[in-house]
Image 1 (cartoon, helix red, strand yellow):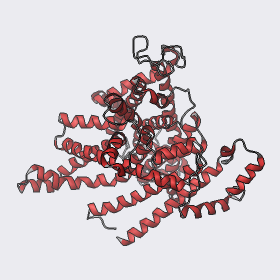
Image 2 (image 1 turned 60 degrees about the horizontal axis):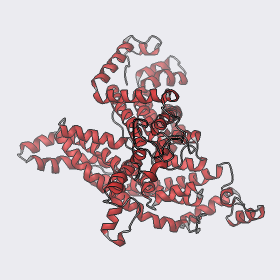
Image 3 (image 1 turned 30 degrees about the horizontal axis):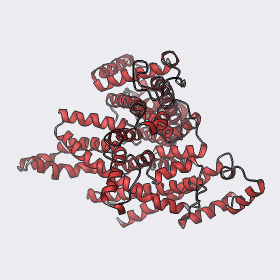
Image 4 (image 1 turned 180 degrees about the vertical axis):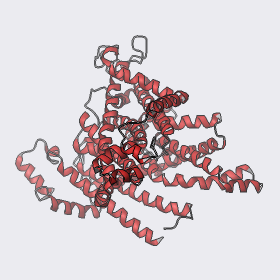
Length: 313
Length: 302
């Protein structure tokens, strides 16, 4: 296990290095000067000064080493927009919002998906089962930003139950936090919950056919007990393996949905950065988001060994 | 694998395809007829494709004409209402179908060609080539396609051609992985060994013997990917990273109309409904294809 852990961690670091390098060089190969965007009306001398200030007059490999060294220390440079804040500070401010949203969408999705999947599997081909299937198809086909708009139209603009935009940190209390996040969480979590519901349904159907279920049943165990404690944990194994992919989906959805609800999280930071041609912000956000993915994938691999003790690395 | 004849002789001379071809088509139509979801999918898709092709003929108004009442509710004159600039929503949605379908299909064609080439080369030759290609593909696999597309657009800029290129690049890993997996299993088949023994060239083996037998999962992947690409284009356009402003695409229409939805719900509802209908229909058809071609369900990611 320890060997596996070390091996995988090194792999994760290599991936992060590769991503950082790709991110750095891709922005350098673009035709046009990255700095031109930030000083569109300054004189040539000023441009030279600024280039020198940002180290852009040096050879690319020197820039790369310097940049990489700074990134390792958590220094992503400064934003060129507005009050020119440090990118790391912007990210630290944005991170809790995105994590709040991603976690809450995860909870919402799971709360919907597990019962839906279980019911669909235990009542195969019933009306309920078919409606779960249709719900899953709809959930997968609906653009998350459109669902967000629909939710705003219904619950904010017409019913006035919930705020349409914005965010309240947890420090202002649980209720305001939840009030602002519940609609974004539903919008971001629906596709994820559709996937999980479908997976739980199909893996439950597999498990229900297994011999040990017959044994358990013939021992006289009650059906709900059987489903919840014998079948369900085993049905979760294939679900956990796709959790990494599913989480990626959830993060992407959060990135998009943040832009609808004007939540100043990583997603909004990233998109605003792109629209403002604020490359330091774009690089920094991409790196942090990538790091989250790599870390979650690592976590999922480990979770796998816990949930299925038969697997040893 | 669909129809692999058992005798190697038969396969080596694949020019004379057995007459079972027709019956496969018939069997497929039959299966389609029986699958209600797939039928709905086919019908809806046909409507959208026809609308896209004949858009200039059937749009009731000029999609960019601004002379109508702005934010007029759906009525007989404007079945889906008008937007914040007084443009007819139905006409814009029909025009949008053209762009959505064009982007979806061309993205997948490009991605398919590149991904297949990489996957087949990696799987067939193995060794260092496999290593180099798959290290990259695995790296890309670790990240959501949409996010990769967003970054590529950030680097290369917006616009129709860039969007297609960015999306196509972002979806390469899906095809490369499917193709490589198929090649690895088919490579060991006897008919490939037989072809090699009689001196068939590598290229011909890949093109004539491996590719046709790897087709089923690739067809399914391509179908489903069209829906992802359409969603991808809509998402990019919605985020302001898509096609040029005033091009009527569904994502952009939602993005522009976002501020007006509290006064005019139809601006926020109908373009999204169009996206959902098309994506849903493609998924229905993809599902039917998957069942029919007997492809094991893969883990899709957006």
